[in-house]
Length: 109
Length: 115
Image (cartoon, rainbow over all chains, first blue to last red; front, side, top):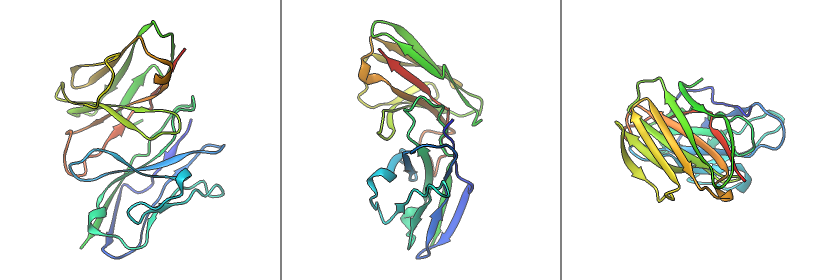
């Protein structure tokens, strides 16, 4: 099974502070991983995917095969970053799929 | 593991078959969702049900027909699918469909292959 783990259910940081949301995966091969975000009163939406190696809204995520991690980082948190964040593997591989349980980020003004 | 159970885990069907995907949640939630994840693509929201009423339908072809007989069960009826419909179908639930930082609970998905 493809499993991702988000160890933090809740995370609070002050505005302007760096933020890192952790995601670890536990399967071999070359995973394709995504970060999704759900802002207050909005639907779940894609934030970024590792294969594109892009920065969205100041967030980046690097796949670290040695540590089997895909942590989401932003150097300076903003209040509008407060949301639920989910890490997820690409699921259409025939394996059982496990979405991350989500991390609720609160940015304190 | 999350309280959302999907069956079957794997399904192979021909284009003329009729099959159904089932989702069940034991969390007492009022909203349930169907998502589709195609190969190398992010999730696509298909349907949203709130208190057994469909509140969102994102331009999904009629060969996909959802059913929500009660707040704990959600079905996706499949009929005359196309090979491009092969994907992972994920069910999710939440306490309410739209609320502050509403947490989604996902099932483990049904891997569908259309031949």
